[in-house]
Length: 83
Image (cartoon, rainbow, N blue to C red; front, side, top):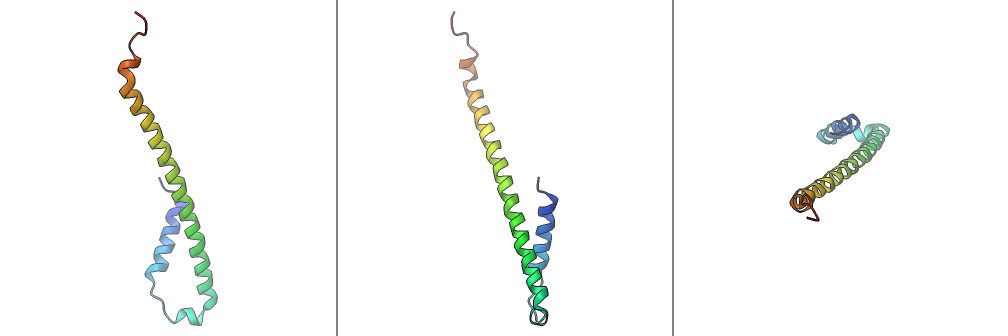
């Protein structure tokens, strides 16, 4: 249900979050900034994927509600109108 891009972003974010901060940040600030930029891009991917999944779920709920109303109304709709 979720895209490969989303799964890769989650793996990268988990790797960043599991690594404790250390003196490497002060020694290599360019690497830390690149990592933060990648994290920002990964969060954008995750947000987009969340929006896409939410939209799909909204459509699914809407279709399910219409089918539920039709199934409840079917006994009245299937009767002949005249006669």
